[in-house]
Length: 260
Image (cartoon, rainbow, N blue to C red; front, top):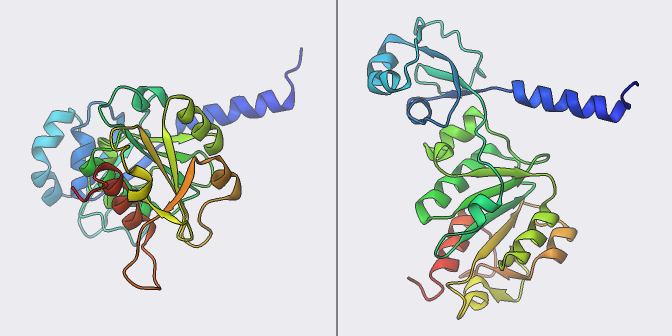
């Protein structure tokens, strides 16, 4: 019996995803990936200078690097990439199901991203999430930044340590988290209460913070699914934070609503 077209397309998409690889670049990002036993590594291209700087990490990884001429770096990277003579082809990390990260921490904090597509912003959010102790950063499979070399370089190693999950439907994920006891706060500059207001007396409760793309902000469905909308108080009557800065401030405020 012939398979329906949608079944064939789904199988093809799954196979393509399984074959997907990413080129990481830059000394810091490549070193952290080489030292990460969870990361499936396929090909390493380095200049002699980069090889010398990464010698310990290369030994840990057990990889056999390809030595490239510094004047003619052969890795398939964007010409504008600041690779520092190091590039590593890897498979995207598999962090497992949401439940593995949403349950068990003392004061769980999750960051949800609603169509945040800029890899530099997502990389910076991953870095802040790692520093401040969030359990995971969650985006969507479509219309969000995938793992890329630019994201990894901005994350400055956090991509290897901070779980970055991508889900099919953000609203369904919010509903699932609410069922696990999470308070879900959507960041909105026009909201009436601040993050600190919403967290008063709730610092120990599991909290998920939802941030939208710069400009459009949260989608209407996302706004409606959150428990409440909150804002970051501004000193003046104008201006707003970059989404990665807003993520860091909101995460800190959720953990230390009285200022820490």
